[in-house]
Image (cartoon, rainbow, N blue to C red; front, side):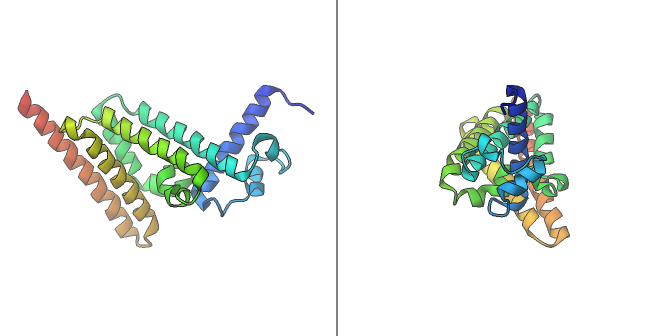
Length: 198
């Protein structure tokens, strides 16, 4: 039986969203195709009408998660205040406690490093995030904007990863707070530098 194209596309999107969330929560090995299909309310059988393999689903779900994350970043790029709010949201307890809906880098980078076919998707995502930070943030020294954007991205992902990994709630919150304060300090220097030139 052939389904209407719109219905097929909707099911495909549901599978991607469910897989993306489950992978970020449990890792690639911790999620079976059956579990993904169960989460979508579909039976196991139709999976192969949409994807050749679990590996193909991994790559496509990462690409889908990347596109959605970059769109959120673009939506926050109107003003320096919005960008700062985006970074604070990234380094929040809410983001820490919701890996299934959060950053794919913090949730899956170490696993993707072992998945040869998925590394190109991650690479494109890192490049895109770095480019956006470089273009959208009012960096103090423009000639060092790329370096500063890489440093900021590394600090964000590293802080979130550590905050999730430790079993001491106070330490976890301290890690996030220190990362936010580092960003705030950097932006204060930008504002001071800008005012001094006016």
